[in-house]
Length: 404
Image (cartoon, rainbow, N blue to C red):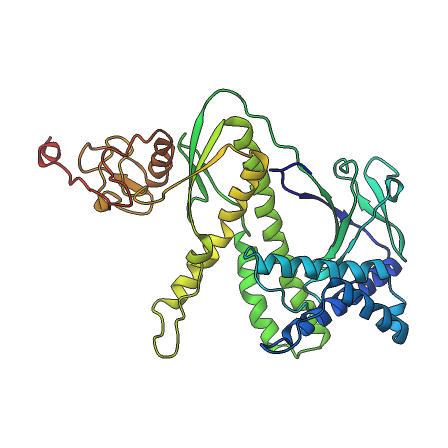
């Protein structure tokens, strides 16, 4: 893999038979069991104790465990060792500061396992829309051939989501989309009411659940609370909730893919705000000594931000258009007039309306912010806004201009 490229995945819908599904669930259970044992070993560490075993030592312990446990020995050693290798990589990411510490895997949530050392004949196409993948101790499992499988795949991951759907994802290096070569620069403002507003005046909305589906999703948790845990009714309602949430996530992911592809093909440079989304969606509960204010309102705002797909959209843009996605300082982009450059906090009359009290410019507030983001590429507004190190230097609206 060349430097600068990111490993992506090409995911396909898997269609196992009932017998194959039982075998796949057994592989998931083995991978989850081995992963949780590794988590327990690292959680046992305390200052002064011997360090937790590494990957090589854990593999030796796995060999002894397989010799003593018939259930573990009946599974694939490749799947189990790969779970340990994935855990070792997760710990390396944690110590590197890029990810959080790996936690426990639960049945019904983190269901999946990885298959490595894939040979050329382990993935084949049998018809126009059907392909097969060879899974250890399961055999050939069919999947929907929705697009060509990347050439030279060395590994793939099989997982099962909360809605009960199986998928196979092949690791591959995605090819970046070529720039159009027109030199056009676009600013992109992300919001809650309007998911993405462009400096060209376009406003894009991330699709979600329909009105009837949203009403049903509000009713189902109340129905789940009345069901007895472990009962068939509890399982059916839980599955119905998972299906609705999966449908919402699929629509959002589809919108992100199509929007990012369209932007990467249309513009040479795409500018976005440097937003710290993780900090923006933190809870406002506070502590017992100092409880937060507006907790329910903040929780609703957090859900809206996550539903708009802010982070995923920029991530896919960076993968499809590497080196063509710029980040600008978000300070005052929603308060500055894109026509005259005056910064006025009262110019934004509402969520959707921006009206400059200096030059009289009026327009959509999100589009105005997107144009400010676009202007930031040429530093067209730096004359009226001082450097952030020295502090901003605001200009008040001129009374002479207000009277005209």
